[in-house]
Image (cartoon, rainbow over all chains, first blue to last red):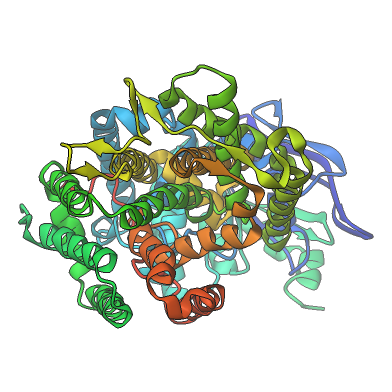
Length: 258
Length: 381
């Protein structure tokens, strides 16, 4: 197997008296898709928030490509090449699809006063180039989406919003993509469609690593190379979907069987 | 497809006609009627999508339309050439629009609250009083320097503003505004409650406060010169704020306003952009205050109260938060109406408060709601 891209060791997060992550050990290899499952409150989203600097890590460390990213501010984590989606979509609904994608592109845009205020002809060329690449990326998800580039994100259906949010995370070609329950609020058919899109996108980016949080086991089975099960902030089991799904401890804790 | 210039030009000429009528007509009921009619047309215009057509037509003619705006202002100023009071009001509207543009950057774009607009306006005014009496700097440098003073003094608020959100941030700016007025009242070096005199604007040997002598019988109001100055300031500030909005910087401001968590997850330095927006806004407000002080020749603490800050905020909300164009009708209503309609003069704060409440309830976007960002509106998609 190839080298680990992300490595979390002994990651612990506490909210007051509650230990949301309890010495979590987890790693993701380059190009791998890791499915993260576990009951509500088991610490999956907290793990994402700890990685991306939204919550404070009490002890333990996280490394990306060998570099320590523990405790970095969210914007510095983004600069290291981690992009994410949110469980409850955080699109800027009153802005256009293009503006939302350009937020994903923020760190690659020129915010200098000269180009933005005075050399507008250069900005014009830049905006046109960005619009072309945004259309291309949206087109990889849905043939109808590029035409809606300038519609407000709030005017899109749920599945298109999810697509735009994933595109926003992908547009700067991150090393690691964190997907927080992409099926939330969608029908099984829509979910299946979105996962096909995701697999297609993944096929074009062999070095992109993905961690996907999901409750829908069919999704996990379909997209993940490996699974990790969390419970009470600890790793309960790890392995291929088949191995994890067979594990009696997992079945008891998560699938609700005796 | 090339849009015709007709819709934009019609809008410009109609607006000019309304402004001129409001300034010239003395009959209160006629003024009220014109304002009500204009407001109704504004509301209808968005109902029937005229606003979009006017905007598209304006964008398609980036030279003709501004030129006609300039011509309209020249005509208005020329018609009012002997009417000091009307010109003073016109200048006040334009300078308040400059201050409103500052608030638009802070409030409307980056979402940084500022309920101390009058204080920053006052800092610009006092800085002008001091700089133009104690130094021999040319006045065209005093204006931006006074704006810079407002931005620099505003930076004392940065630390508390960056550490608070929403109501708490608003309270901090309110407290600053009140402290500022009290500070001026007890500070003898700055004239205490009596305030300071401010020399008029002088450029290339021409003192703007001298009447413009045409011949022995005719003298034109000195406010004509200030109208020119105010128009240059408002046009420059408008172009600046518009370009800011239609750029990657404006997008970063919007992201900070709409969702700090999402913004920072994609690398936006939220604190830095708030600092930029707050400082740029205070610079514009301070510059407006500087020109206003030179025009009125006098600054005193009583001109920069919390109520005046609220007037500024209500202009921005009434016009349409984030839309620089909306400031013009809003400033006209808020500044000129009480002067023209003696009936409402005493109740003006009450009426503005009601107006803002009604706007927030029934039309939160304001008279001219902000349109979606187009980086280059003239570009076909």
